[in-house]
Image 1 (cartoon, rainbow, N blue to C red):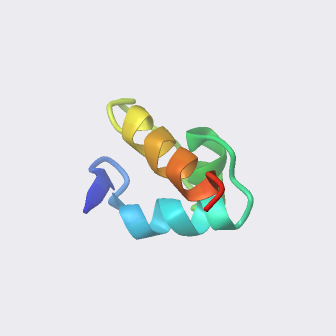
Image 2: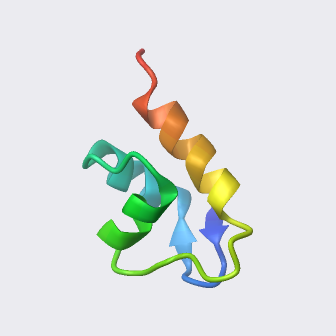
Length: 56
């Protein structure tokens, strides 16, 4: 699933960034070499990161 249309970031990219230590959407985007542009994707990215970082 595409999370950020502006930067063509997919859900798997955000998950990998979270596994790599990103705790926020901004940190995940920086890890991927970009930044949020319009901001509509930030809540989705945040939810993915929260789910990925939650204890199993």
